[in-house]
Image (cartoon, rainbow, N blue to C red; front, side, top):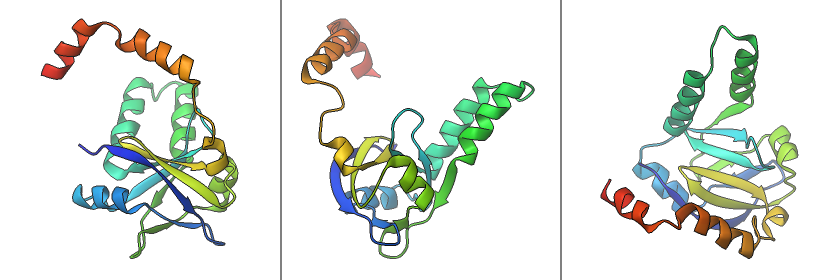
Length: 158
């Protein structure tokens, strides 16, 4: 299973092309992931790159929770998949970020790639200058989520 980790700065060129960071490219290559899916994040003003296999798992997970005979559910699914686009890195490891995606995420030139679990987020660099959560909120949230040590041993055994 692929897991991305890292926080790497890059620049888009005048056409909107950007190099996928080398460490992320190596992980994609070792997992035989040649195609990526790009979409705007559902909650944040950033773009998300999904390895194709991860995209299909995510899409299937959403599809299973939605009833295709419910008009609102169909609209939700349609919106989710219609905002996605397949990306194939060129021989140099670059992808072209379409202008509409750059606008959606407020990206001008400087970007930050952030490895988040099995996806790669692409942020306008200036939006990542401050912590996503204050240090106090972060430590309190981790304590609330992970504070019961009994749960840790069970998860480590899995």
